[in-house]
Length: 408
Ligand SMILES: Cc1cc2nc3c(=O)[nH]c(=O)nc-3n(C[C@H](O)[C@H](O)[C@H](O)COP(=O)(O)OP(=O)(O)OC[C@H]3O[C@@H](n4cnc5c(N)ncnc54)[C@H](O)[C@@H]3O)c2cc1C
Image (cartoon, rainbow, N blue to C red; front, side, top):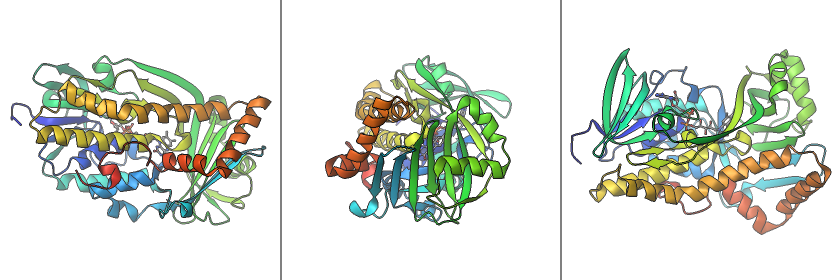
């Protein structure tokens, strides 16, 4: 690799996906720069806010192969069962880790903890430099390099690399600067998140309950808490957000029922307006989009970061193989190899989550009956359940080395 560029790979965005890619490439013979708008390790960084993420079992394997799982596991709550139901109707599906041979279907981790582990891990890699707080302003692509014009410490500066990776989230400046079109559809729904404590222990069961107003998920956490992701029509969300705690918990109780006993306590509530964003291209010469910059999904099935992490695993493998062969990591044929590999998983997960939102937010009787038959059929027909389990656990399809738990 020549030294004519500042970096081989410049990652724009040090959120969940960008930081995971940096760590996946940590220790490789690839010079990495990461540009992040917020101060490194700061609690204000939006990717590491008060949400929790449900990591599929396949994500655990990726973090194991990267060498971060030990540190993450200390604060990860295993999901041993998933209970999916349709409020007011007969449909139900149950998934159980004990039928899979794995210790858990997935794990719940607070985003802040992920951020803390990344900010501890990254400085230990001599091939990674963090440039932050800095914001991308423009991009120029030439035959030999990609240039990011950034604002760093109030000064404009140009950083060059063989490849720019856009990991800067749903409103991606990289995508805009590169002129990549994206289709965007507002779900007209808002997710309200909070940590709630029910009277009964969750027994490591994750609940996904479809209600006539939108899906509601309760994920098991430490200290008997559950992480709530409650999707509501946009027009109702402000009033639910503004309720006092007691009325909020009573409203939640009414929607969820008493499977976990009485809801006793709630933490602070936050709102996330939900939009589906799909970039029309993910690669251009010397540029690639990953994570939410490429595909921002509805959180209904907890797939967004898991999908982004599989992007990371494939991207890291393709880049390391290219560099080992002496190829330019920004060359279009290298990036096309990545995109051809990832497109099937990306489009099927996008269609799956979008399909669930539409099928379960429709109250027409024939559709209600059909979806409930679907849930029950899934529950009792082993091959269908097996297929759902593999998707939920992030183990379906042609997996990159890291997703098989093997180092690069
Ligand atoms: C309510 C909710 C619940 C969710 N639950 C789950 C779940 O259970 N499981 C799951 O897999 N997924 C879940 N997701 C999805 C998950 O949060 C996203 O997939 C994930 O955050 C995507 O990470 P990212 O790094 O691509 O983008 P982001 O998290 O948006 O990070 C982008 C980063 O880029 C930085 N940045 C932005 N612009 C610039 C710029 N111009 N210059 C420099 N830096 C910039 C930002 O500061 C940020 O750090 C959930 C999402 C929501 C809304």
